[in-house]
Image 1 (cartoon, rainbow, N blue to C red):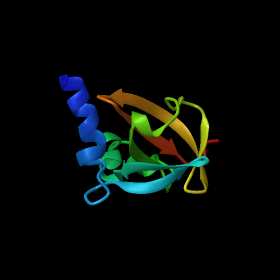
Image 2: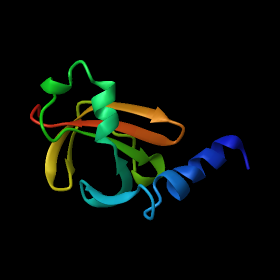
Image 3: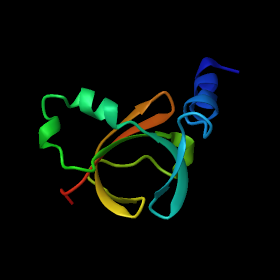
Image 4: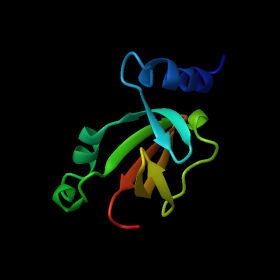
Length: 104
């Protein structure tokens, strides 16, 4: 097993484990396992945090949970609420997605 494969297995097996940090959420029409980390959202956008619309989220999603990589500027229904995908990064098999409210 390669290091990359080990990291990808850790995404679901450790970080997104439902007994630890992982939670089930709806992404459009599918249920995914992911981690919402709004604390990291505050740290990353600290100088602009007060300007972020209430309800914005930083979501960590194993790439294997989605049929395709989310695209910046697209609209997604997350847990029944419409968001704009403002930013997407691919970090070792995880999509780090910033979902913004109020800018669709």
